[in-house]
Amino acid sequence: MPDRVGTTRTTTNGVAILTISGKSTVSSRELLEYLHRQTASLAGTEEIKGILLTGSESGFCNCSTEGTASPQTASQLSAFGQKTMFNLEKTGKPTIAVIEVECSGLGLEIALACDFIVASRSASFGFPGIATGQIPFCGGSQRLARLVGKSKTKELIYSGDLIDAEEAYRIALINRLYPVGEALTQAEKLLEHICTRSANAIRIGGEVVNAGYDIDLQTACMLERDAFALCFSSFDQREGMQAFLDKRAPHFKGE
Figure 1 (cartoon, rainbow, N blue to C red):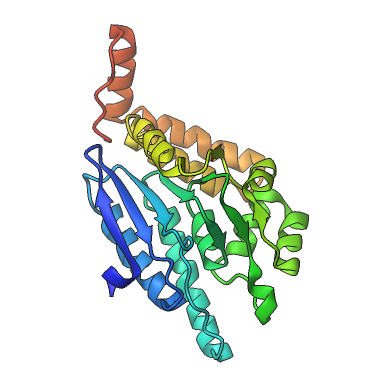
Figure 2 (figure 1 turned 180 degrees about the horizontal axis):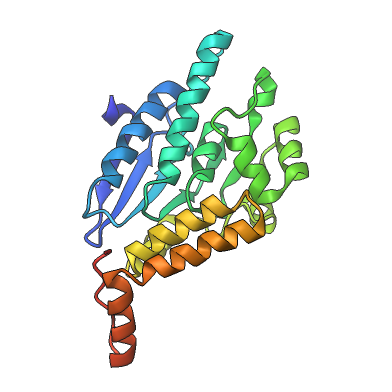
């Protein structure tokens, strides 16, 4: 049930704040199904300009593990989880994970699927699944390796240890580090600022970064070239250029 797993509220500036419960009684399947539904709903809502994902005081996206799963059901869960993460990555709207407590296991996988992560100094991060003979299953091992490198990723998966927010910031796992209790407020301000920019350019820019990350540089630059040219067919580009010439704030439409 959605009210058991999380809640969503929208600010007056079009930012959706999706809070995922930290209840350990919620299964990973329940959590993923909720996130899948909410992601689709928010992505399809024109009034929503950006998404903040946060957790409760007891944790970021905590859930129970399916310890009795068979290889077949484990594979099905992983496939659904990976699909959910790809959908989160492809909302076409800026997404920020806001971490103020422990972010581990599935919670960290969800955070890694967001555009970037901000945290307070009280946060911690890791993949503790090794203690029960498990590894990440929603693409977390691959996303983390692309972010912080293979060696650090292996260390976190092999040890199961948590790292604190200072270390996470040092290795570029998180983008911004705030005093305790300020991460959500500061992230909301940051996202509202981002949402004043062209939604069309944000969507195209995000797609180019994601598509070009794992291919050779020359091909990736060709993608950027074509995407840059595409921007010049948009209302937002013409409006932005005219506003610059007029020395006024632009009025973007996301078109």
